[in-house]
Image (cartoon, rainbow, N blue to C red; front, top):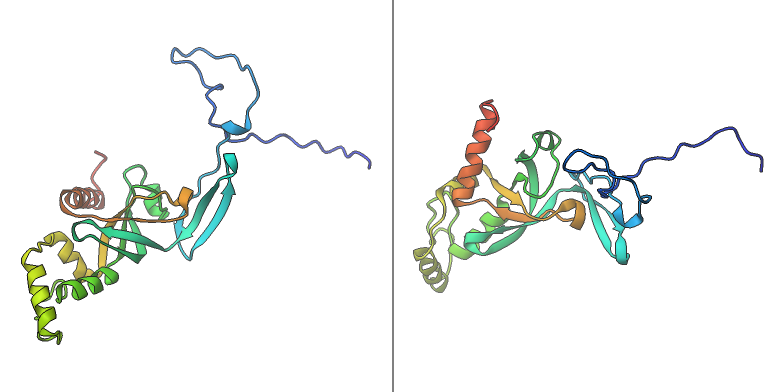
Length: 214
């Protein structure tokens, strides 16, 4: 076939190599070789909230990574109660690294999100025989005497963080994403409690009030 006059410019790939970086003193280093396949980097996943969309990426050694592009559910653990439930992710509220990730509702490890409290409320009723935030007696729920006795024994040793209990009234719980959605294709995490919840509540209130950076 005839050659056209069009010459395609080579595109620069994303690399993790340090060959093209300067030394700590500022001096340039000689480039001793071309880029290598094993030094490559890939574009960020930028996982957002939406109907699940996951793509597989073949990586070094034939393994697979699962690139989460859209996720709307995840497994979240309620540590103090030893309860884990699959629940809906509703919103991204805070990110220590970049406010832009909050504005675009990007799901990354360490992001503070709000999740649906319904699965945890339902578990609490079946485990303790009463709803959170309400003074409902076991008689109203029509439990058997054996169940009532079991619930009373459990409630005797149960103490719930008041800040967490208050969140159940709104039906939303603050949680941290502890998985890496762009690597595993999952958005799992744990419910915020105690001093950690107090810390992030202060951070979010400070950001909302429009005060400067830390």
